[in-house]
Image (cartoon, rainbow, N blue to C red; front, side, top):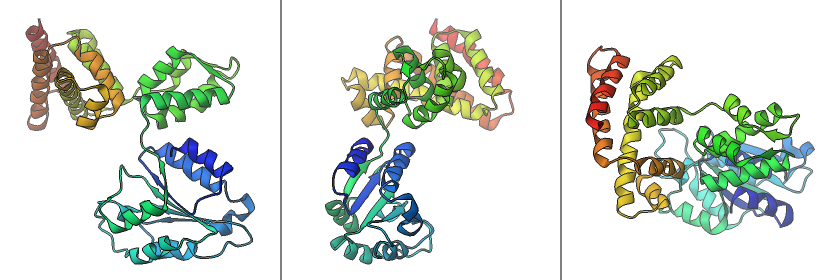
Length: 341
């Protein structure tokens, strides 16, 4: 189930005894945590809510808490954070986690305890015995990164619930500036609403003034200028990134990665893969693939490969020489423009 479904379930159905919140979307993890916390009255939280970090605390401590009866309340909430022992990760830690005791607990969970595993990981290791048992007992809540469509839907719902309006073009700009990252989008809503408090209508000026473009998006603008052979604009974008304290080697690395992505997307699209299929194949965010698919339609594989090779050459020179990074980029643009003409 997703976090929205979880909220509804916790208020309308009997609460389960064991849950796993799995995924790397931080804001969804926090929303799920808050939903569980609301199950315990405020005046009972001190005695009936326990939160334990498995990277610093033995599992046995959390299980002892889970097996204790609620103190002057109906329910006890125990949050097990970062349970890396459920994944394939090998942590260099001296902490000994008693998984046998967890297996016993899962066989007979405490009726008055809500045990929640907050797992900020892409997936659990399904080969492990303890994971197999946990999946049989626990209800799973997804906190995986949202698709662009799902992120748009939640942002619209939040804005409307707050009594505001947001036109499609404004939402498009917010999506572009945040690379469709729901955490960044949701984190911007409160300041955008404050900016347009009088009109109750989120404005394009507000988004452009208050939501900074990600480094990836700034580099994407640079990529478009390079592909358009617009030397003046490309150099201006490059200078802007340098002036914003971005390191030349980092800028170039992202440029190389972006052109690699464009080439991969073009090749896979030519093979007939869909946007979702390409994203899955190369393990890239669907929004990045969407933007790349729109870009590669206008350019040949040869042009993309020429830019890629030129940027790899810059990377080698940045690592082995003391030549001025901006000069290297300007020389690359001159050479690329001649090749692409």
